[in-house]
Length: 231
Image 1: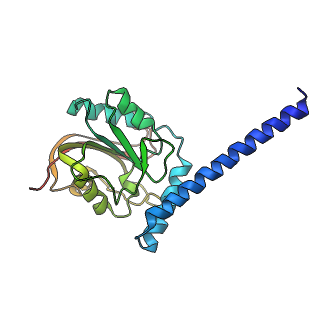
Image 2 (image 1 turned 30 degrees about the vertical axis):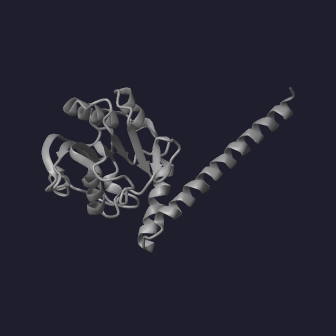
Image 3 (image 1 turned 60 degrees about the horizontal axis):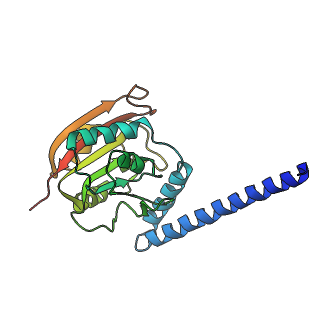
């Protein structure tokens, strides 16, 4: 095969991949438009900003932080193999696959775009799951992106079963800007937004940036707690 012909084949392949990428991103934005229906212009603009942020990091492996939190969650809860697990804002299937590697196969994610059948396109402020649906809710580096933290928390409480375990990691003591909207500041403030629905705090951790247990450039707080439902 001539060099010229090989070069043409490579260019065509690259063009096809670029076209596929553009079509995929068009579908993501079309779904986002649908999610924005019924919301005001500010919420719709918020969704667009968050989608662009998510798309820019869609292939990033969450790495050590995800494995640490998931391992600790499972150690504390010893959930049944059929436990229903929700991952909020996973971007890609890495965290879902890690849950599955721990014999938890009933796992679903939600995000503003999806490249996996296990991730549903959904706004965390308005989940379409029924009440009392999940045994485990995992949100790593998601709550800081909330447009309305109290609305997201109310949705988490609603879809959690009584006694469900919630695992959260979020950056703290950092400059909010762009898609990063919320700085809880410390563990106490994070726990406060879930009161009075925390039955028991099972584990918490605070880490400064760039430590053995925190690869991030910002400090983080992590916590696992069980849910108390009213009534």
